Amino acid sequence: MPLWVSKTEKASIESRLDEWTRQLEESGADISSLASCLWKPLRPLWVSQKTVMWLNEVPDHESWDFTPLILVSASDSGEVHQHRTNSEFSWSYIPGAGDDEESWSRGLSPSVFWNHVDDLIDSGPEVCNQKVAEIVESDRVYRAQRGQEAPQVVVKSSKANNGVKSDETLSLSVPKPRVDEESLVSWLASTNLALGSSQVASKVLSNDCCILNCDKNPVSVPPSHLEEHLHIPMTGSKFDRFSILKNLPTAVNFAKMRMSVGQKLLVCCQDGEDISVCVCVAILISLFNEEGTFDGGRSFEEKSITKLEMRRMLIFICKYAMNARPSRGNLRQVFGFLTSQRENSDE
Image 1 (cartoon, rainbow, N blue to C red):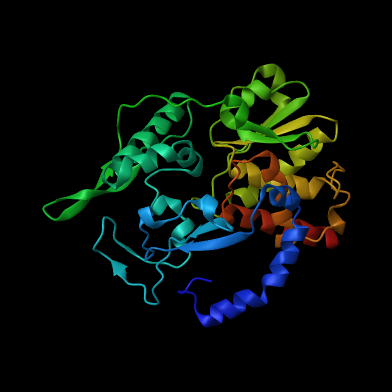
Image 2 (cartoon, rainbow, N blue to C red):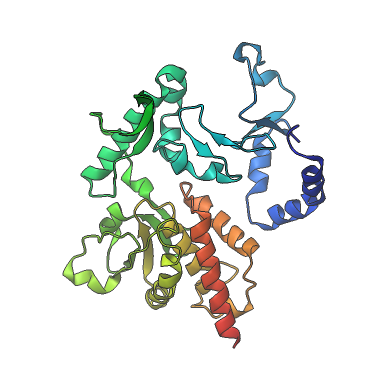
């Protein structure tokens, strides 16, 4: 454990290791494939805001007798969290807020970051923010030209006017990135259920494949396929804490009606990474049995609706939709829906 973890917290973690190991083994994750790729045992390396490293003194990783698992904490490792005013940003530190990337990522999403990780690292600290601005704006322009949601990204400027820092809207002229449209739809094994981005939904629509569109914007649907399409606009928990919860009954009923007659179903949202993933979790747990076969909900009453079951289903989805990254607030609404449905079925 890192030095900044207190003895009490360390003891609490150690007491739960066996439980976490059991949960991992029961989660459905493909542990054996991962283990077969490892030639050396895993060992965590902890990095915090106070970590100091001299790159010229780090040995080549091939000389290590372990495989490093680098764990980066965005949290302050100090015991007292004070209001920050001496850096580019000013904020009151809140434990656990490091995963709220809107507050520090300058508009980068995980997929955009990894697509340009080498360019960002090579740019160095002096021009890193400018490079991020160019990449973010390039991605925004690409999405805007395709009718997707693409708001201007506002970040805190490091430059001050008369000592007062102002907001800066990124607006640059940059080339369009390439996106493989086939990667925007992911079929989940043999379930006849898929998730993806709404921008390619109309290309999937057919007599044997329906669309459940959770994006706030509609997709183009020919009149002959109106019955194979349902538009239920949903927003994330940061804008509406109950939007998904309120709309899941209609979404699951549509899935049940269409899949019970042998049709395939594409669940789509703006990016295919969050809301559509949550809806698929609800559909799979509500309408599929333990073997992954559609049964219309007959086995739902026998299921134990727990967070572990939610995690197991999410791991299954991530095997086929590697860009899936549903937020905890949205998953919490799915859990609320499933538990309420279970309570109603028990009455």
